[in-house]
Length: 206
Image (cartoon, rainbow, N blue to C red; front, side):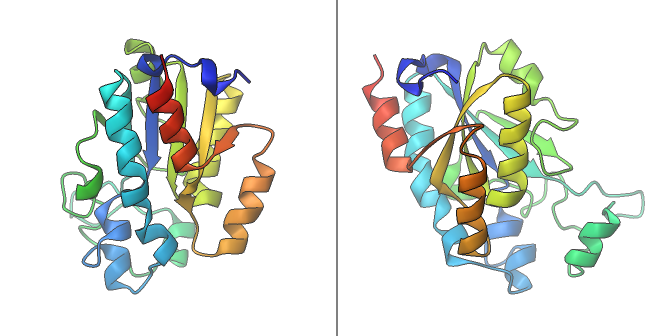
């Protein structure tokens, strides 16, 4: 893995996973169902300075957003395991173009939005196309949940020989011990640093 201190920030993108209203906003699908966590709610304020700093350096901000594709009757296409795990999800939740599907206001604007239908931001999405088209070589990754979308995306990047930085306090899970265990398990596939350390890296880049 290359040293992030040597990265060209104009060839680096911040990639956030699932930081959208249906997960975080009190009026979103998870908020209405009482499925919230303080550690998750704190992420947008912590990550927003990185997005703005990287954009100012010529880098990009990609927002990967979980998507439930509506069928012709408006009912979402939900995988059976997800329906069992989150029975409160229904019509209109995580639908493209909806309030709930959108990136939270604190992180707007993203340069590109990537709709994703599974854990990884690489699975059946345009992420790799965008990276090639924009000459992006490196990713700084945060979001939710640490052991789900974040971990899957980082492992997929590693398989593609894409160097990454994982934001240790820029991602979160619903349980702290799960978050901590995931950080430990990903130590061999990604660089890890805090949001403050990453911001210093971006702002200090020549």
